[in-house]
Image (cartoon, rainbow, N blue to C red; front, side):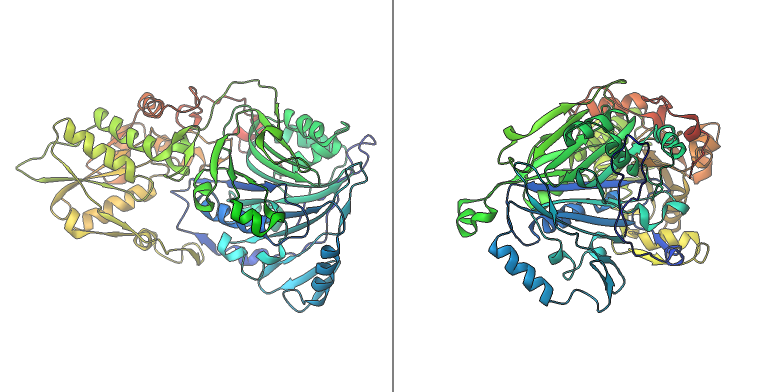
Length: 597
């Protein structure tokens, strides 16, 4: 794992970002890791973030990192390539207890048996732990802090073991799970959180989104001789903060974020502040919650008596750790938490970033990416998908049965479960005879496979993920409901799979409009030429391509109506992947598929 390395931009930048030593991961080993169980038809989210902050001081265990671990685990669906946690232990003075623990730490061997120097120690098959040196801020309210960072390729449960987590000490932490696009992005340098040191101390960053004006700003840095340590646009944010000549860290962060366009839900942590921010358009979700301490817990350990405030991309993370949802981080809002004064939300400061293009959250979060039990943008994902199914039924109901044949509606698990149920019930309500059943059984234990492309027949990949219930589909007219159709390859294989098990007819329904355009705001879609809606001139061509007897999509207006029925916090949406209308100007280098790296 590593942190970004940078040189100075101009003579105005007092101190450039500096990084600690790094341990390389052999790229050749990454070529064969295929995450079959998560990415849908070439379409996948890129990241999830989680953070926890409290006013608890003094030497403590890995309280923050443990909560962060579960928060990331709940959001594993948003990124499976890598994971990382940065924790911060903060106390006002070097107490006797601190000195005692420091002596104890020195006497206990670290994981592995090889000292790599400068605080690094080897660990079998995992990126090394690298506890940072103690930092002393020479201010009136000076604090001492230690930062602990661990990140690596793999799922959250693979990266963080019972040997690793105890060393990530402190009550303050940020975490990140990542899904990269392809090829060159699969480098250890891109794994977050990033941790760097600049003139005002250390700063850690976890970012979900995509900076659309990244290349324009990056070009200015490169011309000035700045060294970039990763290919991630997230690193740019750290350079902008380092370059700022503002006196305080909140001012530096505000100035840096104000220069960005595109999507960013971001968590930043320093020795004195914790920041949670969201881009002015509000493309990606970000929420704030709280874990209240009971009187018994406070009495048992007064050093942990302060409430812990949590931040997550999705609220399902709060459900797992027992946190109470307080509110969304609003579009264009930057929450600044002073670590010396964070006992209650009224102590937090809220700043507003300048807005140019309006509020346009990503509607595709509801369609596929978010977990069904999450609430995002002020609405429950499960409820939105159920309404999408109902609206789809009004627009394109099931075909009428002939000669008393059985008509069965089945979902493509699991993101289409609610839509299929809403579809079947609404069709019945409208007078169309049908039943809802589970015709496809998903294998939840596919995990990662270490195979070379082309080594396994493509049809076998679908069979690894899905099984078919013959009881449900045999001799029936099957209407298969999925949340979306992207490349169409998975849809085609599922149609064939259902036919092989005795279905008389197989019809397909998509609970969202045709996907025709790439996303430049934090989602990974295939090349537009690979999208099935662009490869055929009409619906008939797509129907024939996937081998179905019938096909229908939910309309764009129908999707918006279904979302608005659930009373979300926004009235306008980004649906550029469906409509081609981008709410923020997209640079030509992105639309032309040019990557400066």
